Each structure stands twice: as structure tokens, then as C-alpha cells.
Image (cartoon, rainbow, N blue to C red; front, side, top):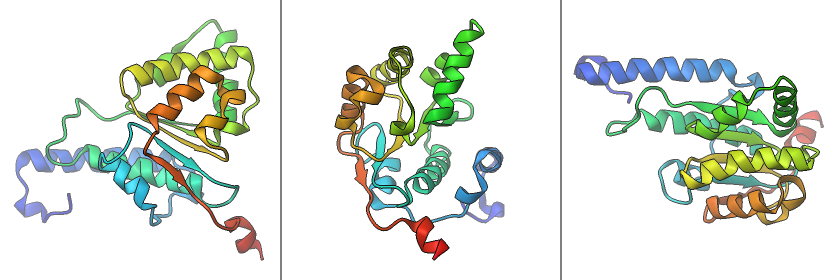
Length: 204
């Protein structure tokens, strides 16, 4: 949507304004270090374009750029949602969480007697969970993850997950039911990233 503004129809003007506002809000929520545009892997581009599974799983060792790739993939997914011919009703909702923060938030919400977060994560148009294997699980958090992932699984709502292990090795963290669903949701869109730790390269 980069046409000359004089050539746009009123509807295209409206969509462009909506896109600009949506991207500005997303950029405000994006950590500074991940706002820099980068080239993303072809597998991520294919997933945005609808070539691949419902969801996207970025796997690889520490420091290879999984999180940066995921943030930029979310942004480009948002851009694609406003492409001509899209059928979004309202503005697409993207929820982003580091796994440790998510688990803490779920526990805090339960202690307050609410379940708003679970409902939001079930209904959001896209959910991105960063570093899924980093969180320390409990039977209770695994049940909450099951509620979230099962609802998204049966309604084909996408997730983006970054992790240092593959989906079939996540049972200890997520429980076997979530690991099974996630493996199917991401089948054909598991992106294996490799290389040296970029943070150490910068520090060298």
C-alpha cells in the first residue's frame, strides 16, 4: 500500500490511514532493540503469505535472532492484514508475551479471581509467545496453556512461538496436550534458525 496518495480511492485512503495507525501502535509496544527492520527468513515470509501451516514456530539456539525475526514477522503480518481484499472486521489484535511474563500474569490474574487474560489470548487474531521453554511450568499453568491453545487450535487462530527446542520436545513445559496441538498447528512452518550468538559478536 505505497501508491501515490493522489491515485488512491476513498476506501484505499481509509485503509492506509488505518494501517498507519495500527503500525504506530504496534511499534510503540515493540521493544526498542527489535524495532529495527531486518530481512526475515523465507519461511516466515511464506507463512505471512499463507503458504504453510496455521502457526509459525521459530526454533534455534540462543542469540540467532529468533525474537527479532518474530517481532518483525508480526509487524509484516499486520501490514498484510490491511492488504487490498482483506476481510478484517476492525483492527487486527496482536498479543505478545515473553513466556515467563505470561505465566506470572496468569497466576496473578487467578489470584485476583479473574480470567480476562485467558479470554483475550483465546480470541486475539495473533498471539506471539517468546522463548516458550524458558518458563517454569506447573500443572496449573499447563492447564491454562491448554485452554488458550485448544481454543486457538479448534478455531485456526495463529500463534508465533520462539523456542530453543522443537515442538515435539515441549511436553515438559506445556504438557503433552498443548505440545501435540502446537506440533500440528506449526507443521510445515517450523523454521530452524542457526548460527553464532549475535550478542557475543556485538560484544567482541
